[in-house]
Image (cartoon, rainbow, N blue to C red):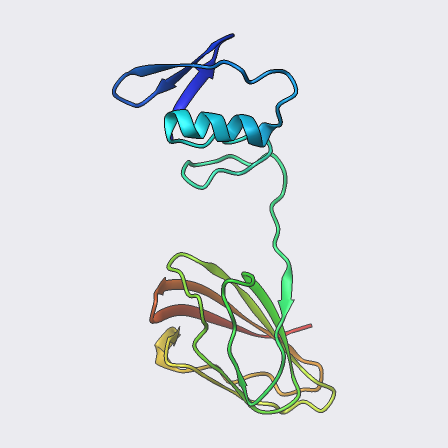
Length: 172
């Protein structure tokens, strides 16, 4: 990303290999931010990013000064449940039938989270897992079967076809 500074009548644009001065005239005090951005973009070929001290950056390491949290997204029970990993990191699923948790869509290496598996009031529901789910020892878990039992699968995506998963059973 290029950086620059605006003087009274000049925009100094840092190209990374040297500065380029662009005369700025005729903007006037009544121009909107989008009009100014359009003129700067036309002159430099680069858009102006608004300053927001509270916006996380995606290309630098960061230190957060407040807790970070994500929502728990409810999955809809069905014969096959396919999580969309673009929706959330954490999910809940009430099992009202035996089902298969398929390979998720929108898988990105490095993503991690949890899936809370809750037996309905009947209990005894079972699950099968798609081929991308890699459990310790290569064996998919056996769920707790009591009515209203809660189990959890924690996961980290290793690659587009490998999701390392750890199963913890029978939370109270």
